[in-house]
Amino acid sequence: MDGNLILAGFAVSTVGFGFFMYGKKQSRPPQIAFGLITMIYPYFGGTPLIVLAVFVLLLGLMWIAIRAGL
Image (cartoon, rainbow, N blue to C red; front, side, top):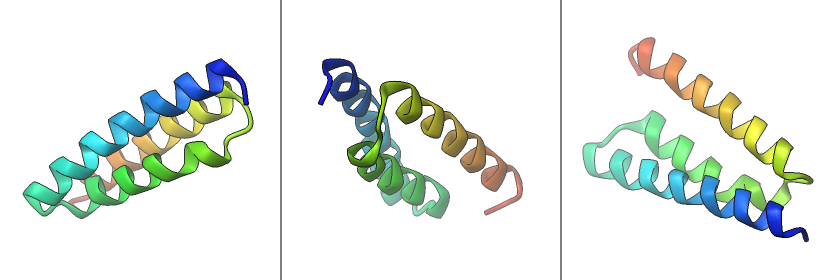
């Protein structure tokens, strides 16, 4: 474990927790799913760059899902 990986995972998980709480309160499935995934996947990331790249990809997918009306 690298200190940068721990910091990146903590940042991503914190944002994911915020989205999860928002989605749960507003009954929004895309935000709930995004929050759960981003709280869990940093445990399996190999490098901070991969963790952040997957986060940006998931954020884009959530944006597309919201724009599609989900």
